[in-house]
Image (cartoon, rainbow, N blue to C red; front, side, top):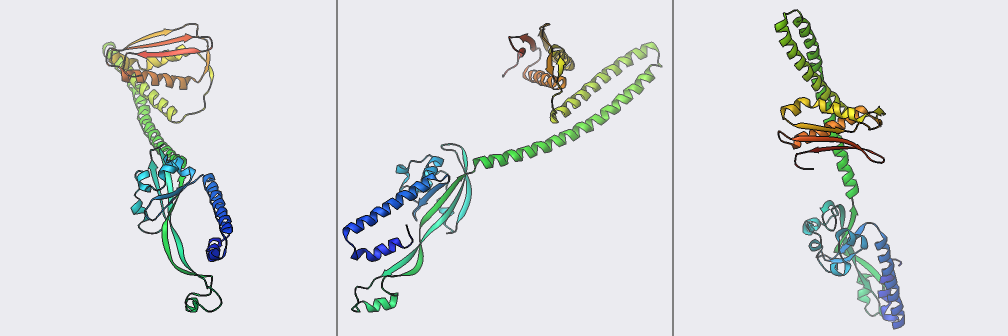
Length: 344
């Protein structure tokens, strides 16, 4: 509808017949229906309120965001329909306001809304009655017959424009978490390297001690050799933990080769033998001898078995029982870890 149509209609209201008035109002209704169709096609939510914060219009997108029904929401205060919305604080400044809120009904979402005052200019229409000079004083004060005089603006409500920013907000949170994880990974890698350096030194000094022990008499040498062997075994174990840890935090592409999965299981169990013995946990291995060779990355598969055994150790008390079984079905090799601990 062209600008000024309503003003011109008001100016001519006294000079047009009922049929023409009806046609004008039909045009107004058609224009209103067209605008509502446009607003309902917009993805952003639109809510219009009166000066007291009561809803006078809302489009389909706004209804969907807040789980509202147009028939129930019209005429109700907006802050009664949207929990956590402090409407008075948002509108008291009289300036446009942009803010983000988190809602939990009908779905957990993050919503950005932009609230702007709706200001209508008060205009006074002046019409002369005829050309005889009547009401001349009024015309001289307010202008020519049929003119409009701008006056002060009046706030008639607010328009709220709503956008669903859940996806962008969660992407930002995931980016922050990823950066934090990367920082922790770098820190952990640095710590692992720092642990690895003294382990290398321990290896060297154990070799030197072993050479010195060879010069001792049999009784003393045998006892010291046993102690050195235990120390070397523990150092090797720590070195293996550091190596596996570095591989875990720096994942690489699998290096696939034909491997016997039973052999990898046995190696993983041997790695935990000291801890298993210390806690008196019995390990039962039921490994089928006819399991075929599989294309595997040996190190990555071993790390997966380490994790399974470690989880079982953490779940069980002393004198627990861990059963590891390999089996075959028509198309797969099946590995099963069962323990006497709680949880899954």
